[in-house]
Length: 249
Image (cartoon, rainbow, N blue to C red; front, side, top):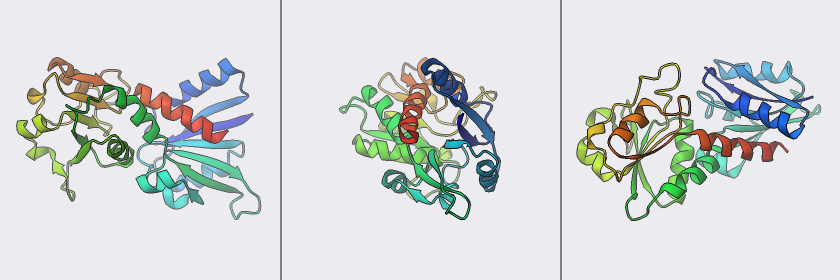
């Protein structure tokens, strides 16, 4: 039986295992999908050595950037984005470790294809991207390709970015797309949400949350209460998972 899996920490919020195992069962695929909850990326080697039937991995928080030095190759898209969320494993006993790893980024495809139908070019010209982790890099690449200008928002100052403390209603008014790429609001901490001036949101705003558990985060709920269009990360998850499956095959 072939094995596929997910590495990250923590993983109790993840739906990937259920998604793939249902897919395998429905399509009669002799495979299983397993969660490997590893706190430190250095544990990756043990995961690969002790699971010789492992053919592919998804990568989630906090390892999307940290995993890159462990790869033998990386796709041009993932290299440009600077983050990896899918790994193809080729067993090669001529290699020092007995395997070769190539990294890809399917977050880009999943996010771009799920948000593009909601974007109105005459309204949605600028975006705030909350968070600067690995997922945010795929989001920003997709926004570039969709012709949407973007600005990072983080807890600590970053070049060209903003901090939550300096967000004003005027900044919110000028940025009609707001995307949460942080884990804030993920189950079980469902009351948490990014610290933005929600009272400045309007019906022209689009709020997108990469979190999909719960289906409506506190971030999205506050946006809905102000009349904004909202979308969670469930479709992105499915689209990126299917793209990963294509790579593994």
